[in-house]
Image (cartoon, rainbow over the protein chains, first blue to last red):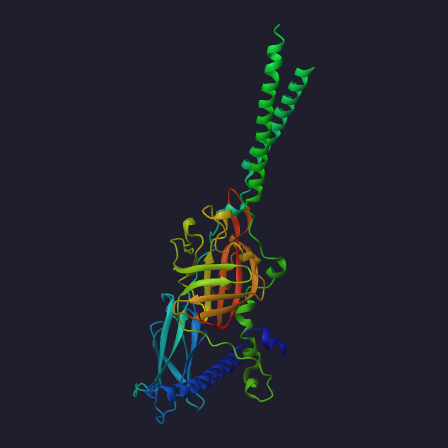
Length: 186
Length: 245
């Protein structure tokens, strides 16, 4: 049991987790949506469900999962699809009977970093019913950063040495002056 | 009869010499004191205690409860774990602060040089931090990467924007103000120092399932010839939207 937590979960487990996240997010959104509907009655009458892309940040070329809720349709021939500028149009399959659809796709390998809208249409024959989410494409830089010139590493050796030499030399000169004075009195 | 001349001359010359010597001694002493008092100190480096934390942990740790519970989370017997903070929308960072160690720097976006490395500010702008525009914005799902200089000849005592970064400890709070006025808050998971050849590209820039923050500056050993031989990397996870300023 303990190992399930530390290992990368296998496919089935991953799917459960993923669906759970979709459901939870859907619940949260339903709540906020209800709150919004009270204050702003005109807002988003068309948007039915929630779209979740996992992971929410992805590198170009990476495979991501897309899940959506609210795709309850009476048509048995409904075809759900996900659209985005970050990946090619992707067909989504119904998962269970609660109006969830899911599928996986690959981020364009040439995708630029940024946040892309993901639109899920529950039935392509009825494109009015759609929901939106987003995915953030992140890219990698190479290697470490050159972020220092060593200014804080520079001990002022020359100043210290110069000052010390001046002080020591002065002691010598002072001693010489004293001796000369003493010698002069003698 | 020539005796009085040198007698009279000697004490005067001796006094002059002695005065000169005293002045020289004071001047020399002051020079040494000034130089040592205003000498730049090498920047703090992460303690090995914090450095041992594997870099990849923070990315999955905050999601761990979800992964291990699976369906069980639906049951009423599941222990109440605080829900992960809701990620924020996209908005570019404009300021980064770490109150405990005294980091406070403006942030501007930056891209990549031809060799693929992140472009950092020049020495005249070493008080500024940069946000790598290939990374997520702070608070968004994904790794958000901020970089800044550790030191610069153009600044007093050589201290640049991220001079104190190496003193970061797990639990430290990082606040990032964003262009929309909101503040994304993070908590430090680990502070590490890595060699430039062993830079953990995937841990720093790789996609994550939750909002993450990485702060980078120069660190490790220093030589006049090769400069800094490594980087200090601080990993932090998102704790929620803070109070807007």
